Structure formats: C-alpha cells, structure tokens
Length: 178
Image (cartoon, rainbow, N blue to C red):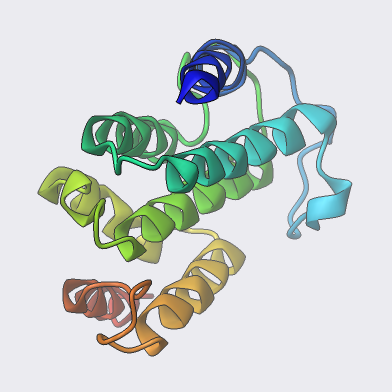
C-alpha cells in the first residue's frame, strides 16, 4: 500500500503531466502520404505511446479498482482523441504521428472497458468520441482500431476481460466509410 501511493505520484507527476499533458515537440518527419511504421516514429511520439501503455498497466495493477483513477485516465485518453494527439495544441505534429497517438489512446480506452471494474468509467461522451475513430480519414488507423475492437469482442461475454456488448455497435460506423 505504501508503494502504491508513491507509484501513483510518479504516474501523475511524470507520466501524465510530463508526457501526456505537457509534452512539447515538433515533428521530425516530413509530411508524407503513406503510413509510418511504429519503429519509424520520432522519440517524443514513442514516449507518449509508452506513457499511455504504462498508465494502463498501473491502472490494472491497482488493488482497489479505483474508479476515480480510471475516470481520470479515460478523460486523458479522450482528450488525446479529440485533439488529435495534441492536447495543449502547441505541438507541430503530422497526421500520421497524430494517428498513432489517437490509435494508442483509443486502444487504451478499449483496454479499460474490458475490465469489469472500470467499465462504468467510459462515459457516453467518451464512447461517442471513440466511435469517431471508425470515421477517421486515416485508413490504417481505422484498420488497426477494428483489429483491437475485434480482439476485445471475440473473447466472449463470459470471460473476465471482454468488451461489453455495446462496443459491437462501433462496427456500424465502419459501414459509413466512403
């Protein structure tokens, strides 16, 4: 329990405030027309992706299923989706770096929704913003998101870590693709 408070402080101060909310960088990749592989992303974007994953692992590691921490975490990921990965709107990033950040945030929300203790932390507004990933202009982003959505739904309703049935409705937005 003692270490949990210390780790929470580190997560809040260094990862959330330092990397997710206040990251400052300028894109190092010239604008291009094709998808950027993850290993070709610049270090600041990889740090944001790693920070999202670390926050999810921390949340899953909490022993008390802290719904308030889950709600705050979902709000951060939702903000990353809404702002195209640029929460403070002071970074100059290209559309593929933005897509990778949005994809990571969307996958993180799905991961939170898979945990029965945290499912209620994904509010209807967050769900609506998550559905916009299915309408994103970036084809690769949509494809990767659908793969993760399928993985979460295909586990079945009886398993502990499966997406709720409501998430099946996200496929409807795939039919609106032009």
